Length: 157
Image (cartoon, rainbow, N blue to C red):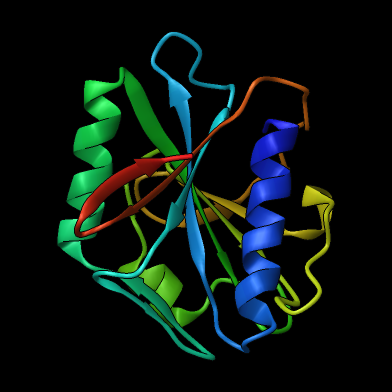
């Protein structure tokens, strides 16, 4: 996980956490280096819903992101989202998350004051049948791209 992805996601979680709502996004890697998470994709507005106990993205918003990633020779490898208190997979997370083999999800706890250390987040990978706990990735100093997405498209900053 690049330091930039870490910093951007923590700042985004806190921004919305101070409004008492969950938020999230995705980490992407190049197809050549799928273990280096160097792109952070933050959810914008259209087709995105944030509530105190739920964060949802429309199929159209997801489609825009995944199509853009393919065009950029990137792959979406992990999702992050926040919780108000502890890092756990809720029933909604388990039943409606992206349950795709080898896909990773992480929950950033205490959204109003999120920890900047991924070791205290919750990390799970889907093994084809269930979500299993996995260790957090190492944080590395690599160039990071930040994009924002929603039903309207992709915006690079």
